[in-house]
Amino acid sequence: MLDVINVQFGYSKSADFNFSYKFDLNLPVVIHGPSGSGKSTFLNIISGLITPFSGSIKYEGQDFFELSPAERPLSILFQRGNLFDHISCFRNVEIGLNSKIDKEYSKNIIEEIFNHLGISPLLYKFPSEISGGQRKRVALARVIARAKCLSKKLLLLDEPFNGLDIHTKVHCIKILSDLQCNDHCKIIIISHDINDSASLGGIEVNLDDIRGV
Ligand code: ADP
Ligand code: MG
Image (cartoon, rainbow, N blue to C red; front, side):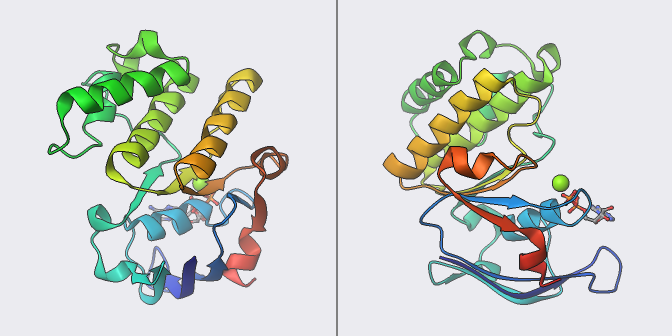
């Protein structure tokens, strides 16, 4: 359960956003809403990238505002993917993991995830050498690796399927469904595709309901 209670925030001094919602995360949640309505802002607040003016967020009873972003048991895929261009795709995923994890163990997991996502040939390429859809899959690989290696089991995915062809998207949806079912991950996805919640066997939430508009 993710309980967002009267979380107020604005990019200027006025509190333009007021988010309140109880997410029962037994099924994946797909958030819809028009462009510019605050969807990315909302995920960024949960992740800790943005600090709100007031309110509270509790996840399984834990107060998120008492934890630094790194301490929160979550992993986020940003809308723009946010890969570092000067290191390989493999390194981009590896640096999302803790240096205490055995290197051989994490290497095997990363290779397996790249294989599942159909991007094994990209392991040692640089993000600047690959397409937008491939970058999306590398960013998704990072989130999945963090879920598997670090128990970062709350996955926040900001428009993860944009730029993917339909075949790849169906494959990614299957991987996410498996994470929810087999790895006990909780998933919140932002999407503009109204079919995604049905494909994921999830629940649709409109941002208006979260903002109380
Ligand atoms: P969405 O993800 O729903 O498209 P965003 O959360 O990105 O919307 O943005 C919500 C509103 O906040 C928009 O009006 C946008 O222009 C504004 N906004 C987003 N990021 C910033 C920022 N860093 N500084 C100022 N305004 C921002
Ligand atoms: Mg956005």
